[in-house]
Image (cartoon, rainbow, N blue to C red; front, side, top):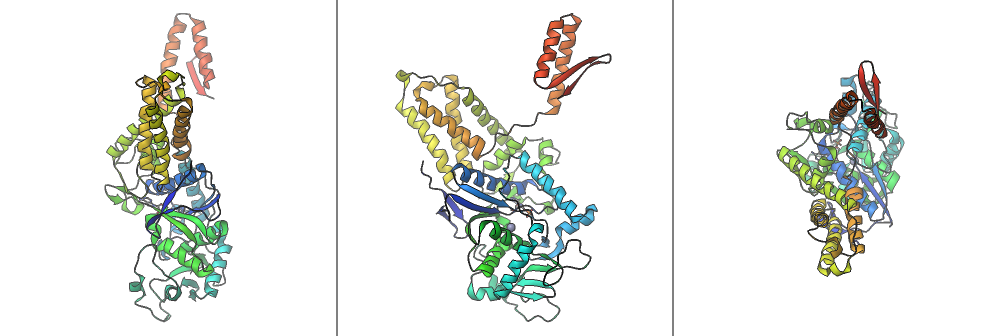
Length: 497
Ligand code: AMP
Ligand code: ZN
């Protein structure tokens, strides 16, 4: 099948045909988490978006190098490179080494990714592991005249840059306003312009995280780390860069300026931005106090939740919206998604239990055309800027077909074997490889406990009747599923192997 994959490019604000720089290779970067606390569900929506992009491109046969960084230094509370250092703040609050904070939340991020069936990226570079590359990039920008040193920090000179290049194109910001107040540094002010941003930031001697640089001890600028790591692993220009919509400005705007300032070339061919997860219309964010941790969602322990939801149902819920639409989080929407998810997964199970029966007398060209159309359509939806919402709608139509074949409402022999196989491979590829919603859920321990109590009670009954053959059979069958039963003086106990 020929694919005409189109991607909405935030820079041109148009859907463009995807033509990689070096096919079959695709270079893709997405901004990773700042590991100073646990990721919330909003963050996860963005990571899931790019997981599906990675999965789909891979499915289409591209050799994707997917780089998703870990921000473990340099991210200050104010995105312009000012304010409190987030990792430093957590370290002080939790009385941990900064790198302990980093490790703790990196581990927790990885756990969440695995629970939500996110594939690991090809490379997961850290800012602290690339200080040398960042210093080199700062030097290059300074050498090209697009930055200046001030009080041990280095700032990107937006006005100078705008003499030659455009700034603000990605986000549509009018930077002229910001540039109004240009001034010479008077010793008080560090920046020439409000729009300038730190690419190297000097820190006080008691700052926990700090590195030696030609400008004194400091930390790299947050925006700079993505530019340095993207360039290092994907080249001066690469195919796709992703992140949440809220990163367009200043983060991604600054990334463009830095790369152009250092290498004179636009770094990214297709900019992709995921829209926000909202709660009752408000962006989910830690500072607003409306964020759910994934754990709270499974356990149903957040006050805004009626009950707990399984990770795959939540992943499905997110994919039921197109990544460029906002997605509002409500109990009702989640419960509807839970039902839809169960329906789809049931059809998936049914499909794998169905056996094809060949009966040419029953063949129907119309039915064959119908199924083939669905199998084509589902790809067309994905090719249309990764429209998972519409692809899922087609999967539901396919599920209807599958159920009709199972129940005999439509004979499976109306389609030929090849069409049946296409249906099977397409449906399976979407559930497993592209949407990634087939992860086995962890056994619910409460259910296991309850079932074991019931089984052992029944076994007690048969033993009371001296039916030891039945009692041993139960014991042996349990052993086969990994449960060991022990009969002791105190009664019967069991353990999981
Ligand atoms: P951070 O760790 O704050 O740098 O955020 C990690 C990623 O999550 C970034 O790509 C953000 O754009 C994204 N993000 C933050 N809040 C939300 C939200 N409510 N919905 C979707 N994505 C978000
Ligand atoms: Zn970034």
